[in-house]
Image (tube, helix red, strand yellow):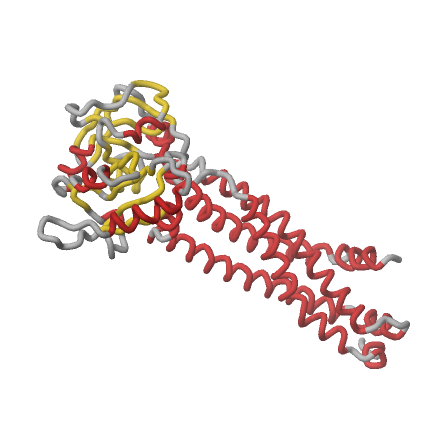
Length: 382
């Protein structure tokens, strides 16, 4: 009998216990893959939101941890546009609201200028964008429009006021498809922030050494002063840094990793219990193997191989479970505007790595214990 066949037979002859172990590992891996996949999807979606528009720098209020409540004077945009090397400056305001009667409690509302280049990346499947002189009007992303059951000509309630839907758009970005866009003047009035914006997106002109230009502009932006010579509280961040340091994203990633660590511990305990029971029940068998010439390292390899095989089987089931869970969440109205429904290959490989870790942690002690058995004592075991 081949070594691999022997290992497989040991697993199959205890089907119920093996199936329960695989299920436990699958739940652990599936939960980790789904949570890490969703967090990774958030980051990729946020990053593409800027990169697809050619944005190199995000200008926000310096020292503010929560950027959604960070406000800057919109007139700063003109000073940014005058800096050599700046191609475009796009300001905007953002907030999250609950839409009554929809069950949606954190819908993102974007306040844009009517002539903003941000509209250039949108494709209107129906209707049109709003004009500068129009108030109480909105355009909806395709995902939020579908979740609300709204179309062009309908009304949507925001902040206790009705906004007429002028159009429904399709964006290249899944996150943006879940947003409502209204005239920035309306949002400034509703939030009571005067002529303030959340921040600015800066597009840099083409250059042979763009990174050097970006670094120079970053320094010049952060050195801007007001009329009294005081430095303005500005922080110019490269898009990747701006996304990775977003407080909400950092919190989601931290929670995902904490949950994944807990899942690894629980899965390892399950595998440990299974392998200890297996070693205990096969004490005489292991004694015979040792008596006929098996060395300790071969016994260790056998137990670890069984543990890893169970974990990898759990990983396959768990990855499929994680993919299905993420896809299902992307179809739930409350999460559809945030969850893409796909998981990056790197996260799937991470799921396999978690399974290997679970198998090793759960199999090391039973393998050591099995290898320490003396043939004479093992053969006397009842």
